[in-house]
Amino acid sequence: MTSAFVWTGVAVLLGSCVLAFHFMMRNALTLPAEPPRPARYPSVTVVLPIKGLDAGARRNLRAALGLEYPGKVETLFVVDDADEPVLPLVREAVAIERAGGRSMDAGILIAGRPPAGRTGKLHAMIAGFRRAKGELVAFIDSDTRPEPDRLRVLVETLLGRPDAGAAFAPVVASEPPATMGDAGYALLLNGLYGPAAAAAVLRNGGELPFIMGQFSVYRREALAAIGGLESADGQLVDDMFLGMRIHAAGYRNLVAPRRVAIIESGSGLVDFWRTYVRWIAFSRSGLPVREFKLPTFVLPSAYWLGLLAAAVSAASGLRLPAVLNAAVALGVAASINSLHRAMGGARLTGARRAASFLLLLVAPVVLARALLGREIQWRGRTYRLDGRARLAEAQGVPRAVPGPPRSPRPSAVRLEPRVAQRNPGPSAPAAWGRLDGGSRAPRRGIRPS
Image (cartoon, rainbow, N blue to C red; front, side, top):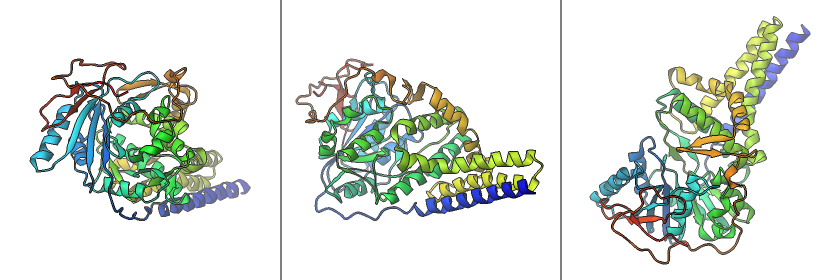
C-alpha cells in the first residue's frame, strides 16, 4: 500500500509539472509588439548562402526575391562554385520576377571552398558581406520561405532601438509533414526549441543574448565591434556565437514580431537522424544553459521519469501507478504536439502523431551520439569536432580580434567573360556576376581584401 501511494504521488507530481510547464510555454508564444516605422528605410544587402538543393527551392528563391521593402535592396546568392545545381533555379527565379515587371539588384557570388576552421555557411556569409553595398546586411537561410513583409519588419525591429546590433525572426516549420522525418523535424522545432526560445524572449523583454540566424539583419558597426564575421571562425554554430559576441559588446539582439517558415519536406529517417544529432551538437556549443538549454530538458526529463516510474510500478505489480506514470509520458508527447500546433505547425495525422513519443524515446541515444561522436554531416560537408563541439580544424587557426572592419567591398573588380576556374579552392579568387536577366554566368573577379 505504501509503495502504491508513493508511485501514485510521483505520477501526480510529474503530471502537475508537465501541465504547469505546458501552459507556461503556451503563454510564452505571444509575439512581441509591432515596431514603429522609421522616417527613412536604409538600404539593405540580403545575402543568401546556398549549398545543394533544398526542398521547395524554386518557391524559396522566389520568396527571397519577392521581399517588399520601402528602401533599396541588393540580393546576393552565394555558392561554392559554378557547378552548384541551384544556379539555374536562381537565374530562372530572377527572370520570372523581372518578366513580371519587378526591378531588382541581384547577383551571384562564387566564394570557393571554405578554409579549415570555418563552416561553409560562415564562409559564404563573409564573402557576401565583403561584397555587400547596403547600409544594413541581412542573411537568409536557403531553406526558409519568408513572407513579403518580413524584411521590412526585421529592419523596423532593428531600428526601433538605437542600441540594437541585430534583429532576427523566430521560425516555424509550417508545411504539412510528408514523412515521419518531416514530422520529427517539425516537432523538434515547433514543440521544443521554438517554445523554449519564445519563453526566453518573454523573460528578456523581447531580446535574447544569442541569435537564431535563419533570417537576421545586422548593423555594420555591431559586427565591426566584435571583429567582423571572421570572429566566429572555429565555431560550429556561427550565428548564435555572433549573437553572443554582439550581446557581450553591449548591443541588443531583438526578436521580430513575425515568424518565418522553414521548409522541410521529404526527409527520410536517416536524414532526420543526422539533423537530430546536429541540433544536439549545436546546443552544446551555441546555446546558453540558463536561457535556453534548461527549459528544453523539462519535458524530456518528465517523459523519462514517467516511463521509469511506470516500469518500476509494473515490475512491483502496482497497476494503477504504472498506468498513471505511463500517462505522464503520453501527456508529454501530447504537450509537444499541442505546442507544435500553437506555434503554427500543420496538423499531424495518422502515425505521425506518435512522432513526438518516438522523438523522446530515442533522445538518450541521440545525446550519446552527439557527446561521443567527433563528426557531423551538414550540407554535404563533414566537420570534425573537438570535445566542446567546436571545429577541430580550428586548432591553431588565428582568431579575429576586435578592431576596424575589413573593407566590405572590393576596391576594384576585374570582370572577364567566363568563370575561369570551375571548382575554386579556399584560396581561389571570389567570382562575381550581376544578374542582368538571368542569362549570364557568374564572372570572376578579385577577392575583396
